Length: 626
Image (cartoon, rainbow, N blue to C red; front, side, top):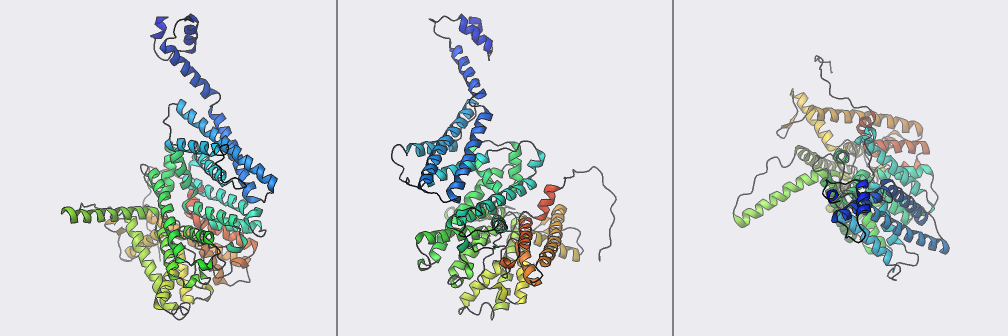
């Protein structure tokens, strides 16, 4: 028997049975026997109660029931008896979610994996929420179930973030995954808008799809009056769709998975890297920075908007707070939606110049791109730190060569040029036109700046675009077509594409064989992608304008073209024909908005089979051009 306890580890189950039979009941069990029993119990739990399939099925059941509860709670009006039933269901689902979380934690612990502090804190929150009811501390009782609903909402989002795509190379395709996430979000949004509690009047399926697509694609075009046709629940749904669509569904799911799932597989890290367009080592930290930066900027913007508007134009403080929050999120995500029937053109907002500057700065920041903002902010932070260090210590600041990368330099240069160009163009062509109603030079400058920046996919308007002069409309079309910067919440062909194309034109005209900028040579692949994006966008815009114009023969060509450019660039500006379009034309614009958001090149990359590098090259030959 002594030989058994000194044999190699691990012992088999038969060894354990033999040891238990040969041990006397009066003798103390050897230490090895306790370890073996614990290992056997652990394996038994992992193979029965805490089996992966069992925990997954319980998790899926709670998710489905929670979604069902959300639909009943927000989609329909309930009487007293039904409300009490929903309250019981919500409390029961919180208990079930706590057990699912506990089972997941036990499974993680028994497998020898480090427990996440975020998941432990989440379980503690569930326990406190459960104990608050029998202890009489649930002050929200009496029909107000928002703590239960908030907990279940985050639970559903967190658990969905845990899902893995496996090793299917088709699903792993980042372009196809990015596109599919937008399709699913649009479908869910359209279904939510058709619920009775979401609207003040019944809206058709086409209008629901159009509104959901416009929100997810952060466009701003609308066939309904957001302020009149949507209830407060409908406006919250719209706000959530704007936030998810602006940053991308995969950004949020990756963020929650980082905190509550802990480890990620190599394929998931590669997916995050391809979607966020960063390196593999910094992909997860970049996602966290994007979420935290977005929430911080939107909170700051909400505060500034709140103090920029007067309380006299709102029914109460809650209305004023929601107005500030909604427009901060809408502006930063370049959505252009407003809770007012005429948007920022409504009195007195179109004469509120401080509000114009706050909104303009928000959608400029949102349109720069997160990578560019983080890269340039790091340079500014190190520059300030170096100057402070030299002031107090006398030491020379450290040199950081090439800290601002080439993309950041090109984006900042093109963006500042387009802002100045758009502002000057509006001042010149609309001084005695749309700007004439502003009596002061500051009012005209503020309105011109806002109008010159808004076509860069922002969507807010403080002028009547149907009354603008032809030169201003042509410049607006150009600005909408260029759009925002890559990696941002805006659309268009992007400032880098426009910058590379412009540099290539001058390089070709001067006979240069290489494209150089900022002391670097731009790769041939970058030039090819820019050229492909421009050609595909022009071809698609031509087809879209032709289709919509043929479906709406009573409309003039310029308003139709303006609408298509606005939809493709996800700008949201209109000459007033959106609500006049028929159902088929609206569905055509839905396709235009979707293609403009995910880009035609991304769709081709996701659909077409990627060709691996070949090991041969054909002889080169020039073709006749011009």
